[in-house]
Length: 124
Image (cartoon, rainbow, N blue to C red; front, side, top):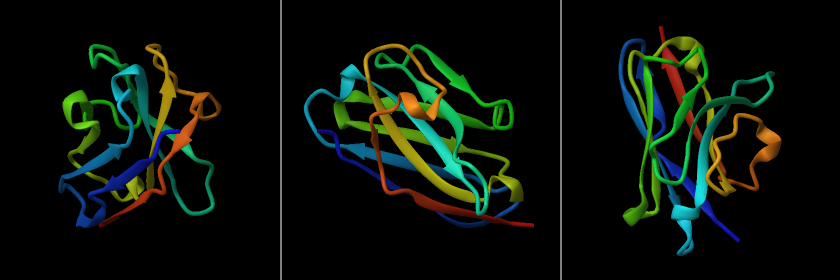
């Protein structure tokens, strides 16, 4: 069982930055691929970014590529999402998720454990 707790969301203006954190329980964090997803009101939950267990492999949705950076600190059991140049369309609840193994995944159904989400609101 893995428990994930996101933090760092908030209300910002367009062009600002935020860093989300996701703290994971358990001693095998380094065995998990981690992902960030988001869900805007009335929309499906969508993929944002993923990072493999070593941190050497990452992948991003086209909509955030060049603006968002995913990283992890296995010693702290934490994955981060640095979000720069935020836009109003980035407004959503952001969720982190974990998947046992070292292969990155973009499909929501591949992930086994999910956090409760953190709200990010970007005003224009």
